[in-house]
Length: 361
Image 1 (cartoon, rainbow, N blue to C red):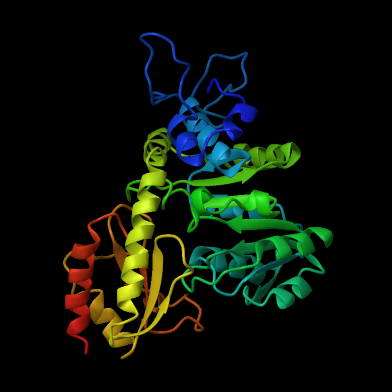
Image 2 (image 1 turned 90 degrees about the vertical axis):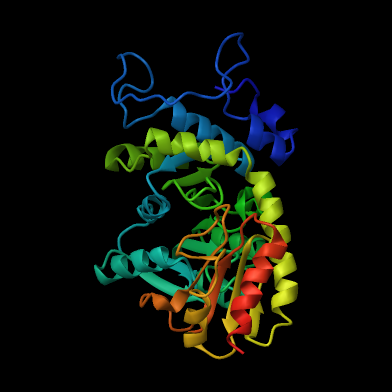
């Protein structure tokens, strides 16, 4: 679809790739953006054949995200559909290593698969590199998040990936929080990158979609075969909206990160906040309220700009106490509030937050 070869794309900066890749050729009177192709059926004789096997609108998004991550992309109906497809790579009764603090949906999928005897799971402290490496010895797949959700812990991806691959395990990194603008796991040794495109990539809280990016052509074919067979494909409108959101990813990440860094500096000085967790990059911040879970719940209901919501990565600022979900690990502090910092004016965000925090002291 795009006129640039992969070699030409590598010469472009990520912000340029986000804007340019996946567009139609520059033909007079043709649309600048890829149109929404509403088709379940295609004329026989080509590569697509049927709506479950491909769509030009998905392809445009896949080209753009693939270029940003440095691989080949497949889109899915949701982030969890992508996660489930990766776990399908694991043989019966094989072992998966994963962070104890991971996206709740990932942990729940692993628990379900283990309960049904489908695979074995070893949860690790992803910051303890030696322990993670030790767990890799007999693993089939090593799942990493960095930063983790919602504890915002950082993994030594290159070191763990090297050890895991030496042991014969696939290495997967959920890159939803960092986005390919801040971290490119395939360059750090990962075999697969997973995204909930619902979050930062689409960026406007109006899309459910997932993605997997790989470099290995054989692995790509296996994953596409699973998607074709199971039918976990995205909607065409969702792919269109996600690509439109991706075009401004660099601007949104830059602004949300700048806002987050400023808010972190101020939150660290507020007496209602007992702990601030921030990896130094990105738009996600976690705080632990000094006066406990009730104070955390009160905070999420006392603001006017900050929205109490469970998702993240949109243009608006949202937050929630994560342990309100019974499935969240007990090792997550009961008073931890995960904050997704949006692109509003930082002074307005702080005034709203400080006013609410002041009522808790």
